[in-house]
Image (cartoon, rainbow over the protein chains, first blue to last red):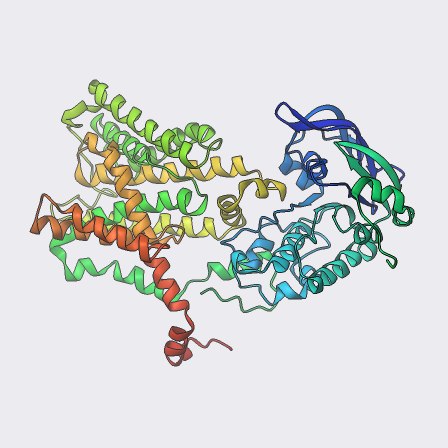
Length: 240
Length: 344
């Protein structure tokens, strides 16, 4: 493993048009690393992912991918370079079948139809169904699987567990754990369920009003109830 | 519906399975030969149908597959028609090279236009294509020295096809010429949409931002398909010129852009055969109804359009696919399907 980070953001200021949403953001993700991004609603978590993907206006700072500057690179070229993004809205192609949703993203590499079906057996059963016939949980699995089909070195996950039934959450968490730990895909994970996000990742940052206000190892932050309570208003219950 | 038999096929196998010919398609193309035998007096109409079907197919490529709405597609049809006509008028009446010229001319125009098209969607596209169509119509109208203006282009003379087959009064040559070109360009379109490029186009139709996020350069894809579609529309226009040996301003008319949209929506957009079926229904209906009442022939078409859009949102073919895909229908025809040797 080289010591050069996979992704590094240096003093990034970004937003939409005139509106600045993020400021002074610096962070790094190592090859096979994992980072949880926590914070209340509207602090700029999704904008952070959009900035990495190239869908926002960057006013200052730079984004490096494996050491090369990609600050001005077009989104589709970032995707080809190895950044995958699962949006909060999931954005399944409604009139394509599950298999077409996956096929359209396919690029050669470790993940193919067989291995993503293996990771998410539930969507294998629905392969001939249209995107708009899936349940929320199935859509989320498909959105994640579709991003994996591009064989990314870094996967950006925007609240993958939002609004899902507990049993589906369990199934997804198992798959994410396997993806991060066993398969070694680097991940940036945004999640409201802080305990789950922290248990899945190595490092964590806390965002408040567009700035990073706290950095910690995920394990340590999990125990640091005061900080969690202060920045995301979360009372961590007795058992984790 | 489509059946992928292989348990875990890769992306290329998946596309190849889509590309396999179905029995109903073979029947359809054999049926296009029927006018020669059954209605030899209607071959001129048949060739009009084939040309319109080709035009509708070109619109389907951008509207049905890439989600590019256009109310000005007659611009390319008309441009091709004039290109073929002007070439012939100036002494080169060889049909095949004339058609190629028409296709290239319209394709070039489409390529230039595609840089604007790729930047817009939905309502903006409708207005831009509409305006572009009107501009071209007025340009043709005022450039009388080149196009003949409102009098139409006179003096188009086609040489015999392949040096052997004259364009006859009954439309015999016209029909088989148009039909063969329709079939060839249909094959090209079919291959195109069942390729990875075609699947990407459908992804762009569904959500172009998402396609960029998974690595497809949406705008370049749109430029490509728009150019191809324009060239194909130009060839259809060139065919009309060559088979009728005349060009009028009508080839650029807004009505033609609107009609072709109606035809495609009637038949079912995004299904390749939709435009073909739509063209048959529309032109045969026009022929029959205008015989009954020349003034109000569009009335039944209007009724049909409203009924189709209300009850069969996917067009006539979409409705058929829904019926044949239903559980009950499957049970009904299963005994008939045994001969196809489908494994369970």
